[in-house]
Amino acid sequence: TNNRPHVLIVARLPQHLLDLLQQHYTCHNLILQPHSEAELAAIAPQIRGIAANGEAKVSREFMARFPALEIVSVFGVGYDGVDVPAARERGIHVTHTPDVLNDDVADLAMALMLATARNVVRADRFARSGEWKKGPFPFTTKVSGARLGIVGLGRIGQAIAKRAAAFDMQISYHNRSRKDVPYTYVDSITALAREVDFLVMITPGGAGTRALVNAEVLEALGPKGFLINVARGSVVDEAALIAALKTGVIAGAGLDVFADEPNVPAELAALDNVVLTPHMASGTLVTRTAMADLAFNNLQAHFSGAGVISPVPD
Ligand code: NDP
Image (cartoon, rainbow, N blue to C red):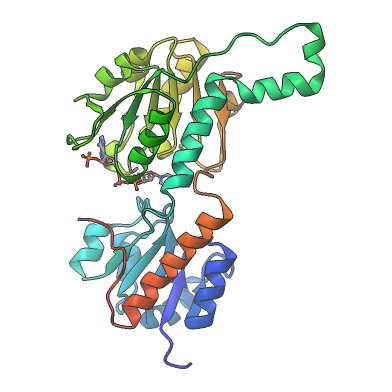
């Protein structure tokens, strides 16, 4: 076991993945055992793999500390924290876990859409607390048959569209490029927002999508419109969103992701027209296990010489 590859763990990862890594590699866990500069420098020459998640920052400077680094395996489909161009320059593979989480993320997008429009969380409190005895619950908003706009019609976006089709929703979408799909393409997010009742964000994060949803888009979505964000907190101007929710510029929002996780702005938490979940869209046991297996199998495939299974795209 002396020649087991050394793997550096730079993110909080599920126990199942930690167990697999521990069984096959010499692991150094920066989360469970914070390393001093000197300790990190001592192990740096041996590190051949990094195990990260979508949020962990794996910068050019950080990777430069590991001269023998060959692969960064990300647990998650998003990899905003990894400097992929810097990795490419050195021939370091970057892998992620696409597809295995499509169903769960799409399911949670539907759950947030239904929960927000039908005010399910507020209604639960109403039924539990006895408020019901004072009178009926206020009317809510119909989802079936409504107009849905999907921003980011990729793997997960298409899984959302498939579910929405079963709700008889009228589906349109915005991407940078048009797709060969039976849904209506709209070439700007503001125009899409203007035409729909529900705007669902499911693009990658990072610089290319920062604050895609700004005050202008929220204005276009309008006082009967709902925003659902299962992408990344960075795709929404959170201050503009809070202002829009407070003043009725939009009707409500269902949010799984936030600008500064795990900190949820108190102003957002105080609102009744939002449903908030703690970045848990892929968080079922089955899916997190499949993601862990894929993140591990990418390392295994690489170190066995077979070539990685799911590299990030160019
Ligand atoms: P894909 O790469 O399959 O799809 C991404 C889509 O976004 C593509 O259709 C792409 O189309 C579009 N897109 C990219 N940039 C822009 C842009 N600037 N404006 C408009 N559209 C854009 O990714 P997945 O569907 O697998 O995952 C999408 C994202 O969902 C992940 O990157 C991650 O951030 C998020 N996610 C969140 C989870 C959660 O727990 N909440 C769990 C899993 C994923 P085009 O290139 O034509 O623009």
